[in-house]
Length: 375
Ligand SMILES: *Cc1c(COP(=O)(O)O)cnc(C)c1O
Image 1 (cartoon, helix red, strand yellow):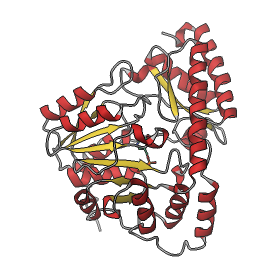
Image 2: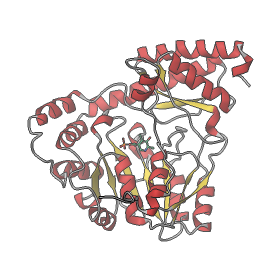
Image 3: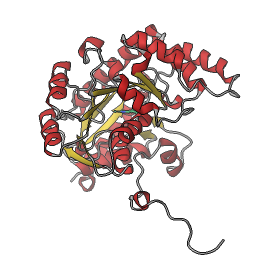
Image 4: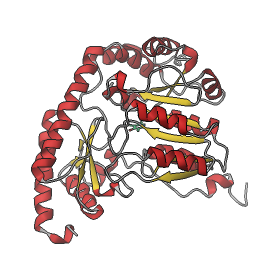
């Protein structure tokens, strides 16, 4: 064959190359280290429950078989947990996968979606990647989400989708159920409310929106955070049957592997372990807040497994991410104003927290001693 090579479809051809995440593996390679202390991706420092490990080890023996494309056993357990029906649940390869489904099923090219500027990047990645338009509203200066602003923007743009992470990433802030309820009721009719509850397991259930299904809301939950299974890639969403039926027309049938299904099912039963993780994460947040106070840095009150420290300026925050990487510690920072002056640090184990505190204090002292890195 000769002539012009095949061209991507116009939508893909015209997309700017983009990578929502630079992984710690790549940062380690670049910095010439075998590994880093991983406090940048909000993974669980405490690992999967032993029950999940045992279930996954056993399931490896059956890796020659496809998983159940309906994830039925897991969906039955999830339906029992949430007091809904299996027809209200889709299991996917992470919330990242489910966000793509929500975008593809409910947005057409040119449609508008509304989200907070600088919120969880995979959502924006999917919206842009499917040719829809993202309209944004900035965070408030205190790190909270401007719910009134989002609702107003949704009306002004006739949005077909509205995205809210609650508790939020990257701020860690949390809107109480009554505010989320009022927000949902203030949205334009016909807009799908994508409620990302990746950190919902760190909040006592009564503080979250009451469980019954709302036809306008799709709620997303993951095994990646409190359950410690980020690398297994498994999550689920809860929604009206009509939403789940729409997703079922386009979802990847075998995208969730059987080892992850077995691990997630076992993890769901590991109540004591997950409760311990949640308590240890609370202790870790308190450690970080105390560390911030000791170092003279403000922190945003967090209901997640990470805390944001206020470095005062974007340049200082960026310099701190680099300085910590030089010391073998991987953290990340919010990209958009007004939160771009913060660094975001995942709660590690007690020893990881101590190592971080030492490196952080050292890097700050150096930055303070060198005004060039401290504009
Ligand atoms: C971590 C995170 C996710 C990713 O979840 P996966 O199930 O691992 O894809 C989604 N949303 C938010 C807000 C997150 O912080």
